Image (cartoon, rainbow, N blue to C red; front, side, top):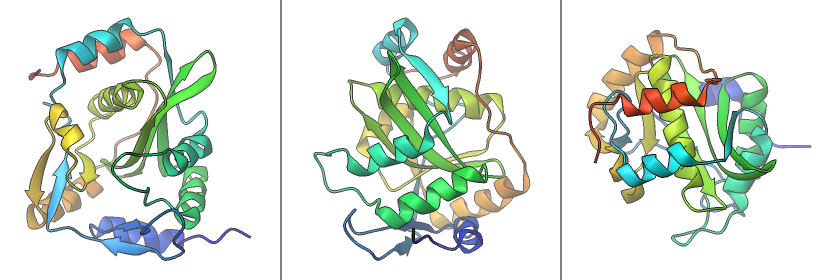
Length: 217
């Protein structure tokens, strides 16, 4: 039988600025972290490389939301990464799949001929989206999913896209660190506000939402 973190307890941890990680996918232990600096991607004035947006605009890939959440988190867990082993163990995988059944976690997925080639997932509370992990099986497909996610968060008036720890790959999207005291204040305010997480049916609307952002690199 699958071992999971008690769901209500886990949600309370997120509401108090903690998030879970395992030391590796083989570890059975879960630790909860609250870093002194939090890494945030701005929703209303994010950046993006022009070439990335042009490639996204021309892509023939298909994007879906919550079509195959278990496969997304499984690939995030199993994909080989240059920098280090993944922090997603079986307990985290099973817990987030259970949260998905309750509509609390979501995935954005990129497909080529029905094959899943990129994706990301995260947890949604109030008007906060806590980005957990992403993967690419083809160049830039996880970044394409992030652009798609930003369009959703922008359309439905989310307040926070939390990326947890510093990640140099996300600087190109305007991500920045804030002190945890400021983060917790913003978190409390953002948990009170309710935003829906929903797919955007028109890809042209996705492009329009991304393109209308004020800053581009």
